[in-house]
Amino acid sequence: MRWTTTVLLVTALAGAAAGQPGPAAKKAQAGKPEEELGTLIARRIQRATGVKVRIRKLVYELFTSTFVGERIAVGPAGRPYVVIPDLKVELSLLAKGPGATVALVEVRKPRLRARAAWLKRIYRFPVHRQTTVRVGRLVGGHATIEVDGGQIVLDGLALTVEGLNVPVTRAGTPPAVTGDVSLRAAHVRIGALALKDLALDGTLTGKALEVKRLSLGLPGGAATLAGSVGFGGKRGPGPVDLSGSFKAAIDGGATLAGTIRISGKTLDNLVLGGKVEGGKLPARGGLEGAPALDLRMRAGRRRLRGTLRGWRLR
Image (cartoon, rainbow, N blue to C red; front, side):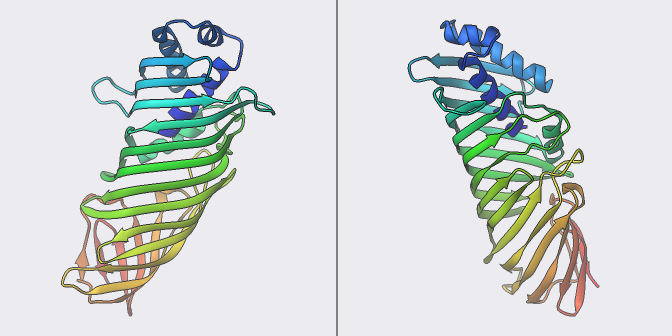
């Protein structure tokens, strides 16, 4: 939802200021009151998404070709899905080539509340105007993602995208975006498990997110993965194939280490596999509020089966 809203907002603003026909361009360039421009852009996004959008303030600075927005909210008034306190979109009106070019998109302290299943909605929306973003930057973010009755919470979230290209796309078609991505989160909570120092570096290739490195701090250790997450089709993102190594401490001070692989055709049927060596695992256990991720791992000579919520050694 945040990705869809941001893309639609940036493309709408770029079209408005780049002299595209229609009331948005006329009001942006004629210096109309900020309330009118904000209302106009909010209505455009609302028509595309079917979700209520409110923009408290939106100003177009003609001499710097920059939009400055404050308190952008998407979703129900009492509990919005996305809140963006501060937004800056700096256009590059003299750039050569087709479509619109945005020099900088900067989002500060956004708040996101979404469901993982909403990722499939990205495929519903067409992109009518090719847009290039030279630098996109998000700082101080907080995201709560609901997954199968559990939650994944990211705090201290930072995202940088460079050379992002969003081509014209038909509704129902995977977004063939390209560019370099860097994501960081200081704290991560998966169900009842508190983790830290999430770091992801990768490249959007038009067909997938190629993950060069994905690392996450675990109790007494860390996990490091690499691989890819495909853009898939109408069923949403996929296939997923990430693999690497991990080390973690368990109750009693014992240490586990091994190799892991997360794979699946879509995000709805992921499997965590691999091999665990080290301290003695209890015969059964589970993680409250965790995603329903299938486990198919070897623990020494035994097998770990079930899900993250409830597993057994057999």
